[in-house]
Length: 152
Image (cartoon, rainbow, N blue to C red; front, side, top):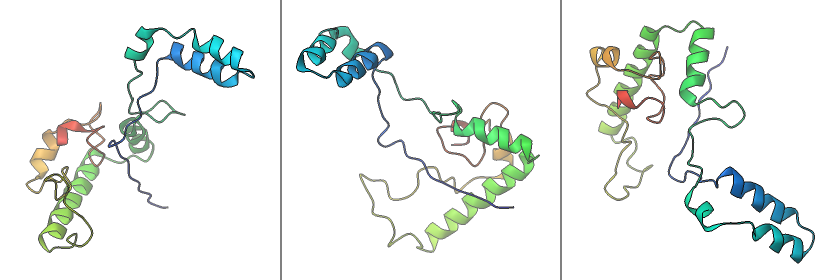
């Protein structure tokens, strides 16, 4: 048995182009001559530049978000909501204690007024977790705010 963890960031979320524009740009990139490239790029229309493909919070190979993956994992391993709530509560308590004792003082640099993790809920309680909605069936407690906005 093993436990794995990871991080994600939304500070530089990619904004893709719409599908029609993407195909034109790929065609231009595949062009072997300047004429082929210009011919492909001539298909671009001004309106295409104002219809970006907004970022989606999904894993590109599965089409599922972290919350959806968490849901599947919790079902497969039969991890109860109560167990997830207990882990989330313990995590928030430990993080709050680490901030209080100065653990992060030399590890983090305040930026634009933000000096600590803004998803920490030092005042979290079992009742608050139990009433919080999470992703779909409320299993994504320990996940990020992208997948679990209600617990924030």
